[in-house]
Length: 66
Image: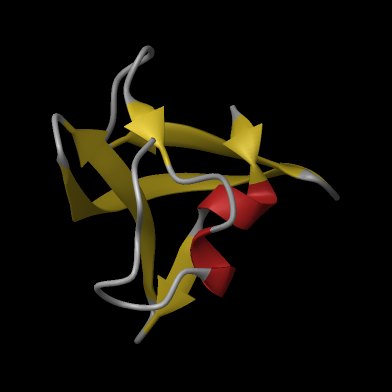
């Protein structure tokens, strides 16, 4: 389960942005809204993957890792 702000819906697809090393990649996920603030992911990422929390506010190509 992740905060709903980590999941973006584009063209009918649910996406998250996964941090892998110094790169951020988009990943299709499957799941459903668990409640009004969370999304339950059933396929696409594993527990422990690092995700961008506010994916809907992230501009393409403008992610800084500290």
